[in-house]
Length: 359
Image: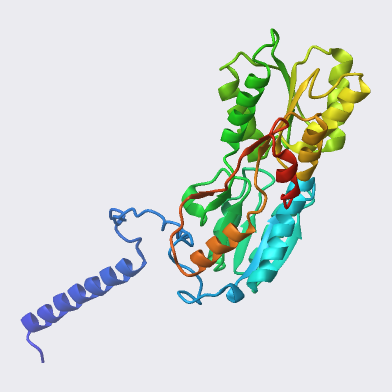
């Protein structure tokens, strides 16, 4: 038989063991003891991967790309006049001469169509260069970023856009602000003996850089001789609208000494309106335009247009050269200006100049 003390020890041990097991079971079902939340180190969301401009990066054929390697998608604004026709012809003819492939898109002066055309070129696996002549200055940044993400390069021609200069390869075109200044100074000279210096301004597409910049430049210089813009309205680069707007103004008043057409076509429309109102354009009312197309030279030779400020449309050779340089990874200047002059109806060699023009 077991000793009573031994039996007592066994009994106590059993009780202790039972309590211990019971405690473990309760621990298994009890809610965990509250502790402080783990410290999480805040980190910034990963930055969006920047799209690197094509400057210096080039195409896969770099540094040995040839013109024959280029497939250019050209987004033209439309066909609103002689300047635009000459610009388009320059791209077609030069592409054929250089042996590059040109895919032409006519935006028909419709911004939505031009945006769709840009997207189409972005999705076209064959196109590796996009040339843009923008209808509007804004809204292009994401499309251009998409182009670079798709491995293409972008060159802006003719009309500037409101976007960082490092977003695309280069801009090739005129100094529209300076064109406006030239126009104002020419009218100042023509009206230097006039007591009144009221000017009517026929404006192009109000969202385009050409319209905005030419208007800005004109206003910067017109105070030099006291010109006053008494009427200003868009005529959308059109002969028809230029005539219609001028006709409406002439019904209100004939107190005008000069008409500034931001392109030749609008000025030619104004000339027709002046004639029909019994006024002699170029004499009773000074008329000045911008572009220097064949139509302007014809009007100057007839004495109905006093001055045209040149805006050179034959930009394709410069654009294609820039595109090839960019394809080969070369860094281009932000702006490659075109060369331009001023032509007057009083120029002694005007007929000779007109005969030698390509546009």
